Length: 119
Figure 1 (cartoon, rainbow, N blue to C red):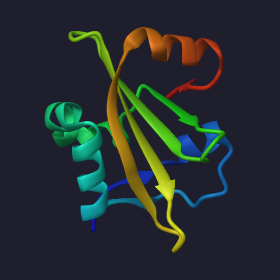
Figure 2 (cartoon, one colour; figure 1 turned 90 degrees about the vertical axis):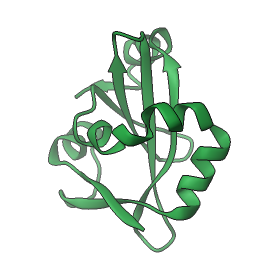
Figure 3 (cartoon, helix red, strand yellow; figure 1 turned 180 degrees about the horizontal axis):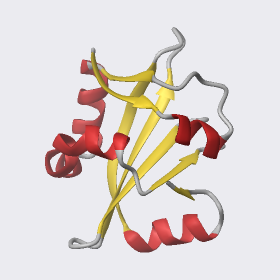
């Protein structure tokens, strides 16, 4: 398990979270395995940028289904957005659960619907 980021006060304020600023975000072996198996190309292309996505997202949101915090970075040159989902474990720690690329148009719709907020 390695620390890859922290939940910022800005994210807490935007999403109305009851979390302390600076709460660490971890990435464990099982998380890496899950992402690499489910989204191998995206993990290969953007996995090295994970810390940057968490620290400097373009958008954040709260998934209403599973309560994961979603961090989104837009790569305009490639017309791709990368979403990183962070979930709390039963032990109370926050882990990167998923990382995958999406077409920018999907992100635009989520912003227009209020599902994602400009960071």
